[in-house]
Image (cartoon, rainbow, N blue to C red; front, side):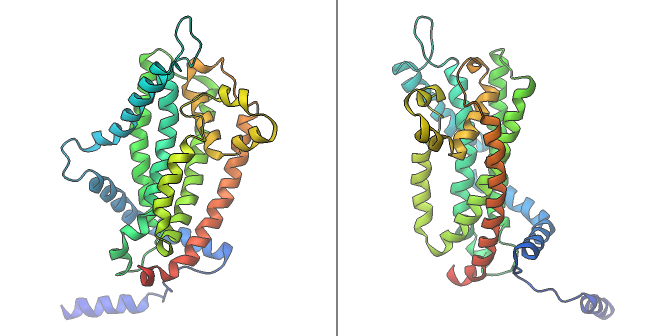
Length: 305
């Protein structure tokens, strides 16, 4: 026992001293933060699984509930807007073709964005007990929320793809590039905002309640319930450019361009692909800046919590 203790003490003594906590500097600090996060990959996996288990703890149906919210929204919007308000296209009445696919496509993208932003904002405060006890890269907590949200997103995406197959309108060809690009924008942008809001929420707890309201309002600022053609008919010039500058508008349109095959004859912004590339570049820069802000603010997390 003594020999083992001595050997362990010798190994520890041979290890170089490493400073805990974030490193200053835009380049050096970012590289070190990435190394720290990658080094905590196993912990991140455990946190993702804990996030999923905690969400459905003691429930009988478990992960089935992850489908209930979007399916309930789909049912309400499909009946209320598609049927009662006549938004769905039927013979002899203009409207939106395959309205169920159209609206579920938008809801799938929006649900991922909403889960990451709302869950990420409260992730540091929710894990305050662990943060006050031990140092580890605090970015793993918002990232664990993102991992859990992506898991639920894959379930919803599977249902969406299955629905297109059932209707005989499975998307094929180059249209999948819109999905890849839109999903990249969604993940990078929402990760940046989740990091920033998670850090700010530690100091201003009202942020998490404000975000829930803003998410609800912003959903109507994207063409999820209504098609782009209605916006195109009403807005033009600067107002239309401002509407299209909303990254989630571009993401939703990218998803619809991929999965809403019945809407191929519907109008889309002419430069949607170029806009998504530009937004992706801006989102990457935003993610970098938000990570550095997070790193700067996390120094006092333990005291504030």
